[in-house]
Length: 251
Image (tube, rainbow, N blue to C red):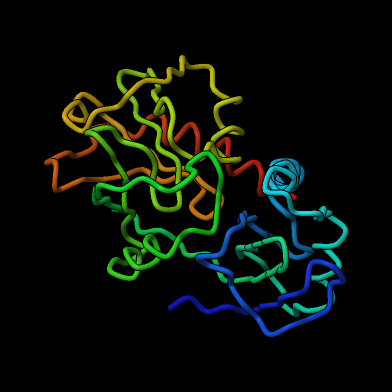
């Protein structure tokens, strides 16, 4: 079980504090922001809030989440000296919930499992996550990720986006997944060709690297997908992207 160090819930209409509710399964959306360092630094917060507030408006929720609100909340309620934590913000028309937990450090030989599943409203980071949470409880999230697919096509990880690499050419799925903030940031930094295509399970053996990227994991290289007898044969792009990502953590 994850250790939640801070948890607060509010009524959206007046920000009155109520009993904490993580809001999983409710009609609403969430995002996760990495906090790092002493102050701490909120990684890619402007990009997160721009997308979150856009989606809040789409869901008909009359609320705007600001950077100032989050910083004040952390400063008043957290006594952590050195951060490497994940701040989760979840919101519905009635409730706002914010929690903070320690970020996992991934294993060097990180693996993945495939599972046939597609999230509802996949273009949004919505709160219909109970199925995913039940799957995650069956694995060690420090050592492995679940990769979702439908109709033989790879979509996304349970907490990550996927990048597949073949001879320094990068491929991401065409559609039906959440296009994350970390993915967007990293692709802007690439001097390589990036193509959107349907990535079939049967074609994964063509790729020499498969990477996972997200707010929680940063950049992770999958070492193997044993169900498909796939094993990485390179870490070149991983090394490049992890260096780009690590620059976000510099004060």
